[in-house]
Image 1 (cartoon, one colour):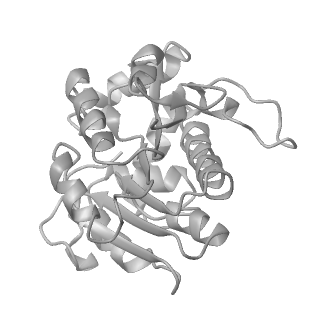
Image 2: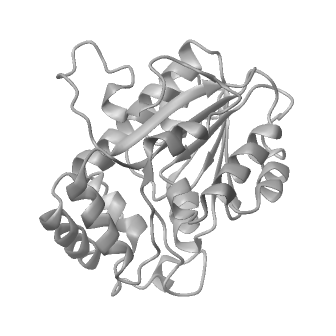
Length: 271
């Protein structure tokens, strides 16, 4: 989850307001990252005091993405990624996972938050064989995103589109559907769509905590019923096991038995 920057300026860290909590830094804190400040830790601890499971959701979300990327590179042969809603860099970012498996992989990150982009440009680097680029654009402008991504990626070749915990920031569901449709229209056959987002219907404590957070005046993040998340994949070929609570998406054989959480996702191929 990301908010507008609390102060102007996109490059200098000294222009970042460290007196006001920022949801991207809070999410970074829950993931175990270091790019946050005491005010963010305090806000993160306050949320987790109400709903301790938020840390599990954040880390399960990242683990789901890691397993998606591993499949895409090692089994589907994908070497191009368009990751929208970058968030603050922490462990196992898209390019880190992908380029460990194939150093030639090319990744374009997209975010509209100047603070996030400042951190990303400083911390997200590429292998010499591959490429990592950053686009300053809003999810609501898919045409701009596709045009900018084409400067680094060859969008005539299969590409993986990643939308991780970003569609919940689009309040209008039909608008969110239209954005996903337009982005996938810009990618060729053989491309993939990876989505995971907070969901309703699994954990009422999470739903109550997030609804309360949305009422604080912070940039809201809307949990959606699982069937609405599944509908983002209409017209695509869903990979097994479909849209599921993220711990159930192809867990590692030696991992503990998964438990359902209020975060659902899936991976699908464009025919």
